[in-house]
Image (tube, rainbow, N blue to C red; front, top):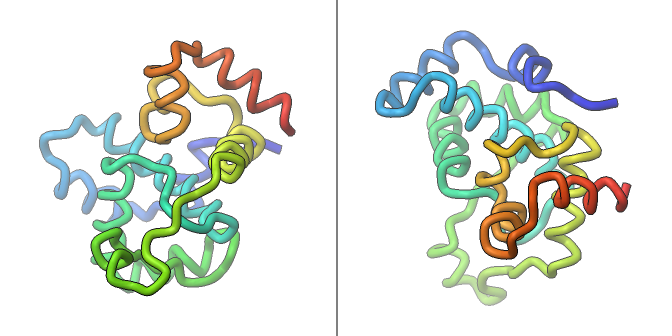
Length: 157
């Protein structure tokens, strides 16, 4: 069963946080802010199963950073998400200092994350592909259509 964007917003986004994000991103249209929040929620809802580099772009990571700053709301959000646990965030600059360094994701892992996206949230919409690094690479750099991307990912489910 596919989880809709409306269900994500209704379940995880309070009116206060919606207002907060709009204040934090005044130069971004309300529709764009809403899309970024929805894509962030999709990522965070799957994050329990993800390990290594994050597969999202800076715009979505920025939403995550803003959410983390509102610690009580972020903790509440984490308890509601699939994994029901606090999702930590570590910058690549910090990870470089650790003995294991930055973990690079194998391509199979990246593909599995995109397939999980399609299985849980439905096919990618053209305006949302750009927020997911591998999906964007396949469409903008490799010349795939969004339909080809979705067909390929659906064939893995």
